[in-house]
Length: 422
Image (cartoon, rainbow, N blue to C red; front, side, top):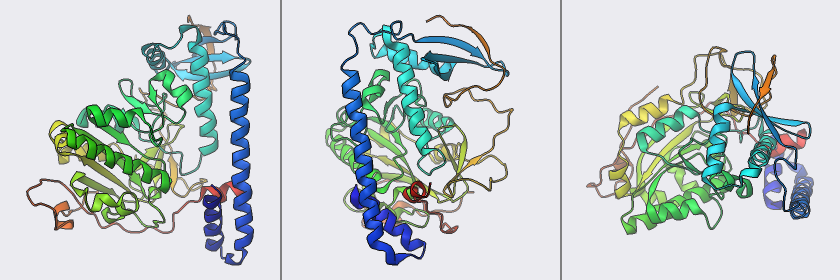
């Protein structure tokens, strides 16, 4: 952690033309790392102290947890979960999905509101920290629906209970709370249930890994390992990975297929057979979503990587039409670009008030005329992958393309420096 902060601060210092202050940046990096570890220890100690002292009979009733329907002025209904003067708000469909997930995982019925409240607060806090930064990024509901429909995706390797599709498994960030809603422990951990599931039973998964190169590399190495193990057993495995530029170490231009060596070198050598197809997305021409469920324009370019072993290619087939539909789900609305934002990598896109969203949305506070009522508990020509890998067995059929992308400037974003400035 010390090395990470030192490296980030020194890099930002050099970018600002102040390279002579390296020792000061090293000291600042050490301080930040110690501060982070100290705060983390406080949280862990607090959890142990108060978590272990809760009475055995603790329930929603003893904690005075309650839930009610709230009708906002556009006649949409949300559920408000209230405790100690604090409330979290969820669309009724999201609340229903969470309740079903909780029930399917045999969560204690007398703590369902407490569990939902705690989980939402946890991810709200995370969103407060990441809001406006490049790491506030996830796949949209239309993209996830296309993947489920076209690729039979049933596992999301990085999501949370609020945004995962109702019938999918997922890996979250907080094992202690995500497991109550059917979540696996984080995919980056050594012993991960989703990894074991794919390696022993096969399956189709999707991932937008953390936008940090070391963690993204861990994800890709683990996925490659799973492919290898499953192939030896004849099990079908398919993974669609969305890789923005920030996933690649020290990359300053839109990612190309050769940059996969920065994430997992084996994908360009011994395991290149797993690359079934890839699509490069132009900077500024595609969007992800943030935790506020806004479309955010990506200014750095991204890669969609389709990884499959032989059985996965047969069991989870797809065509170029599939890729077109997935790509279309990420196309930006025809709206003007926002000029002011805290991140030059991802910018929020304004949406029309007439747009409707039938899927999960961010649990934000309704602010208009609340009425309470009770609640009872551009495509270019590409080159084939075989042309890029001339040593590959020509008998292996695989789709693959390369697009010439144009660097749209120095759009790199350094969250640590922004944090220090704030």
